[in-house]
Amino acid sequence: FDQREGHIWLDGAFVEWKSAKIHVLTHGLHYASCVYEGERVYSGRVFRLRDHTDRLYRSAAMLDFALPYTKDELEAATAKLIEMNGIVDGYVRPVAWRGSEQISTSARASRIHVALACWSWPSYFDPEAKKRGITLETAAWRRPPPSSSPFAAKASSHYMIATLCKHRAEDNGFQDALMLDWRGRIAEATSANIFFARDSELHTPAPDCFLDGITRQTVIELARERNLTVIERAILPDELGTFSECFVTGTAAEVCPVSRIDQHAFTPSALTFDLMSAYADLVRQPAGAAIHA
Ligand code: PMP
Image (cartoon, rainbow, N blue to C red; front, side, top):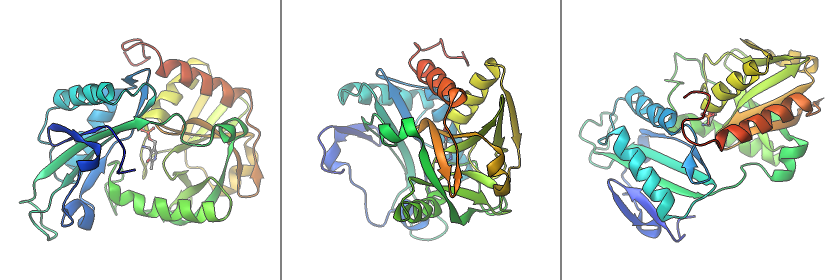
């Protein structure tokens, strides 16, 4: 990944992809003082860019630091970078972290760094699996309680258990893991939110200890526009058998059907496919035409 051609925006300048390097004593690496975003580019434009930018700045504030650029500067750099790298349909990864000036839990002397990278990335899950539905295995690790970390921050530290869970699920032949929260309620996949359907009702866990995804919010609006009832509530694993459809949502995953969680099978059907195509249409609408405009 680090030997590609192209450019990366690093601390205010466009640099060669291969030379976008950081010091080994980076605080963000040792102490996880790092926040990031995941944005998708459709036809050369980032979908809901300002929402992602706002979340990046909020995430940094939750980790006690501020980015040394304005949102407009960062978004202008994003647009330029997409153009320089010739990305039509792809992904943008903004990241902000504390530098190497101070190796200690106190890190006030550390400089704040910001980088933007982007690459072509048509599909997160294999496109065939996206039609058939992916499989999830319930993970052993659980999302921590809201009193244990600022869960609404898209902070790197939250992804350590996500990687462990995803590896275990992959080892066992599943595409992703289903994470429960600390109470044992259904929370989310490792990098996507989850929805269940029954008749014309959509049920999704209330995001009280995990990321309330931008895609999740978009899909809730699309569902309500289609007169589906959306219920945000506590969902327990022993309810899985009562739902007929299931899908996950995320910037990278988009709307992706789930065909199985552990031994529970779901049949991706009209409701899931309608929302998938509604989302696919929306993300390619010209700027300003989005439902939030
Ligand atoms: N939960 C987690 C843990 C994630 O990493 C993501 C991806 N950012 C999501 C949910 C979905 O969020 P979004 O729709 O904003 O991409």
